[in-house]
Length: 392
Image (tube, rainbow, N blue to C red; front, side):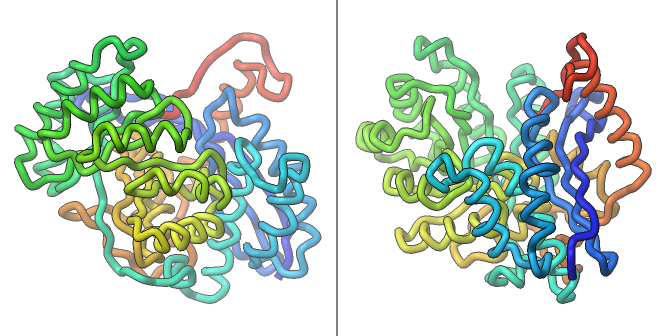
């Protein structure tokens, strides 16, 4: 089975904003690999309009060359060795940035092809440790007012979710974390004493700021504080753990490789990943195996639960995957009959590959709208004005 064609398209989809009843644009990069047997695999990179050009060119130029030279297309391990590392030889064979994201999208598509060719879902081919996994709902978005955020929490609780994530606010360079403390307090009152609460720092806090915030939210029994610091900084994370030992810390590595994870893992209580960012399934599973040596559970962040569910279900230390209130909207639009959480859990099915069936009408419209945005921002030299498509 050989490669027949590679496409990489920037999609812009209109998605609903929860609670408000309005809509916004969401941009995503989709890689499509077609084989000479007619199998089509898809993968995604979390890129919006201003960052998609480099990733797209890497896929269509550099990575395409390696894919065309592969003896069989459904060999993700060979792809990583020959392409993902070699394409970034000048950076010590450790993919990060757009190289990692481009390779991650291709890796997803390769596993999708492999699963379809073998008639098995990806999570079983990767290990098949679980048939059902926990899901947490990211509902607390910085675009919401306090009243909207509280209503979003009540709605998710009514839907059966038992784990909830807030996006931390930008607290003015460490001067005031009271807003986030109050948000955690309100959430605990809404969801009750037994629900899991996650605070996502989104790498927006200094060490001083994160330390104060962690100490003040400890009384609310937070499941973990995710990505608390400005940088992926193991020494600073260790200092944060020492200063606020009762609040577990979670985080993800800089790039899509096991070496960055190795350097970070000793400073964490929970390892995070995302197959769209961290080397697709091939590298993410290796990271999870490394975390298991240190007895760490693994979660995913950064949305895209349909892909990441396969990763978490595959590994023995898989804990939760993220169901992002905004990003879930694009899944509902792009795919026909996608997996949905029930009472805070996703049950995997037997569909081969990733089990994702694109709604071709929606994809066609999203490609057209993506081309309009590309032209407006000067994407690949087209146009002069600026227009954005958010990737929340």
